[in-house]
Image (cartoon, rainbow, N blue to C red; front, side, top):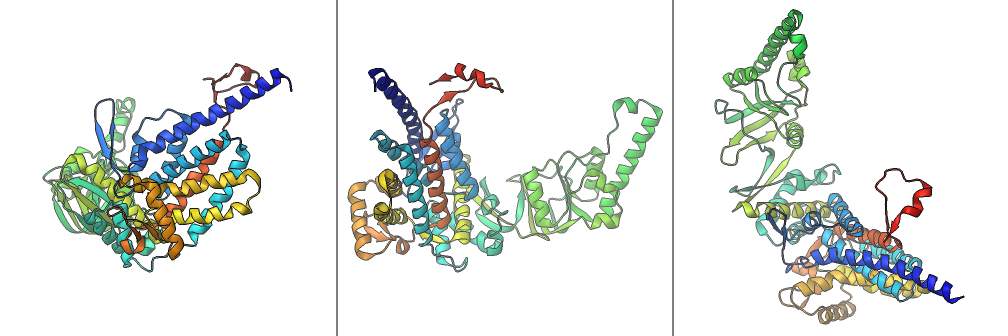
Length: 525
């Protein structure tokens, strides 16, 4: 090979390493932003926007979502974390930390001369075997009365006893069958309010007030009507209204609308939830009839209320139906009550599907958001545990699995073993970070745990973050949902492989359609 060819080859290698290193640094920066929050001794992060507004949180996905990240690789990692949050509702910090370790160690191996393809081959094998090992350690929950349910809620709820109790109570009220429903999320039942009292009740909250004070503030044995539309007469265009025929049609629609409102009154409806606005005539007639009306209800709350009360949402044209047909569309509730202090309407004991609401109180407006995030994490963890069982926490499972993965190095051919090493290092990372956040030496304490696990054959041993002693996580009550661990490792493996496969970064032109002949004009950086 000539000197010119050698120089060209060397420049190509440097360019590819530059892309890997750039992406690795971006991933590492994202991981560093959240790793300090991991474990019971993890600290909070302050996020400040351009207006000076502040969010203080320990929640990994909140940090990742709100932080400014312009690098494409960083955004890839954040999107993976969001997907983890959407699917499981917890474990985003663990997934991010392990992804950072996988990518960082992988780039180091490539820099030593290991082909990327061999690193990825080993990484795939290691992740697959690690997931199999994790599956083998799952303990299913016998019922929602299992003490482990509260342990899961307490760990995910960052040791807030009151929140853990609320979440467990709600889970038991709803029942295991509902928790296993893929379309239901327990975390969606969480509401946090300043000045509210902690409680769980069978019902839903509408974050709106009744239309006026002449309407009743409390009702019992209520018939409920849900209108997914405006409660107004049908409209006529201004041009048509200027004609005699148009005016006559307008008067007919007004009379028809008045008759429709009277039908609602005659049916004995007590509560009307409306998606949009309410006509003045309708408001006056319904107020006189002692009916509570709530207008401009957010669509999500409208759907929850309809599901809970058993009411079938209708458009305004549906009011033309006869009384017998309308009656079939009504729902019911045992009690409806407006809390004037919180500016909310509470609907209790609906006739439809059971729906619990977890109301979390907060002393000040500054902590409302964080209390809500904590409760949602705890709720997501409890639901994940009900679906997929539990495993020991504190990083104990990952460390034990790492020891098992080290044993398969002899089964892997060639340089793929270096990809196995990446997985081993990533699995050790959660415990190392938890120990570091607790103020202990990770190398020393992890050595103690490895020795204790090997000697006792207990895979649930880890470090007590208060004393620094090696203890059994099950006995300490530190458990995690198995699905959180499994999805975190899957997500970390996926993002690491995607990043390691990138060896060139190209800036696209702004035009939507790029012809093949234009490729030479693309700028490489």
